[in-house]
Image (cartoon, rainbow, N blue to C red; front, side, top):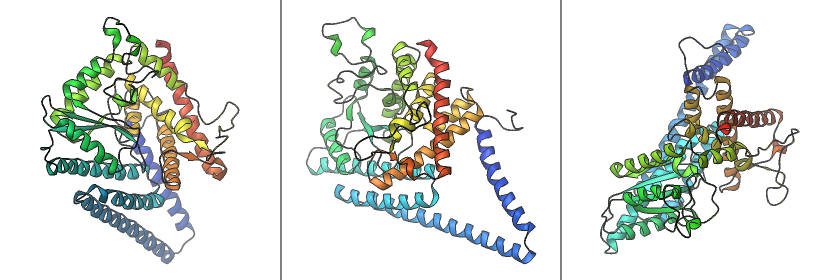
Length: 424
């Protein structure tokens, strides 16, 4: 495929998208000019300009309403006030998505909502401590892993939270309890999802102690913490209940609020752990399992549908489409030494490094857009996390787009297999 002069890497993708838009407008305008009088052409341009002005006014209105809600969240005097504000914000974002169908705009808005809620929950947790005579909140930093960690927060995303504090932090246990309750009351922390807390030294020790192969085997070592990339078969360490080390927990970490001098060393330690393990057996074995995840399209072109339950006849997007895309891109990024970033950024960086060609990168970005749109539409319908779609409701173009997305993910799996499985 010939490269365009003056472009390279992700610039090619940006140039293509802009070129396609301009070309489409030029074609439509040329057709209009060819069968219109000067007066009709002038009227058409006036309507076009009016439509653009309407859209700009809508964006300004959306920005104004979201800013008002941001301010209301910052000024909330009690945690009970946050849920209604969160619900109103979601309504606003849903209306914008239904009009725009922009995944990136929705994720940006949901990322902002998440961080506003988290910031207020932190403040109110500290105020509760002071009001209860428990002292003030210690210096701290909050890391998040999951959709928000990748910058891909949607309406009903679920995340893991990590509260870090200094070596000697009076009141740290009290603050962690208050914050855990605050996150739950604010609608950020669901039952059964992880909220870890500890000092920076404990975080480093946890990472270092996660690799029993570096130490002599001890009695009962079969109950020791698993390597971070091993398949979880037993409960994790007591300090982190209901959480076994998994790839995304470290690869998708992001600092969201608090003291950067606490967060930066924690992120560096996590990145170092990944770098140490990315060419070793446990990670490569996990990569092999990820690359082999089943997709929604079967061997003979049929779709894998839910056979029973509430979603009978629907496709589970997380298990059979979006999940395999996100996870395969993640293992390729980790293997290439790419730290942090969301799925879109990882695709672009893999393109820059030559791990993907331009055509496949473009198809994957379109697949991500398609599958994320379907996920958001599912969340809007069900008002809960989890994503399903009904292929029976697709028109011909939607069906072709969905199947094209699955084909792109399948091609990605083949590329990843060629690059990584031979090393296992």
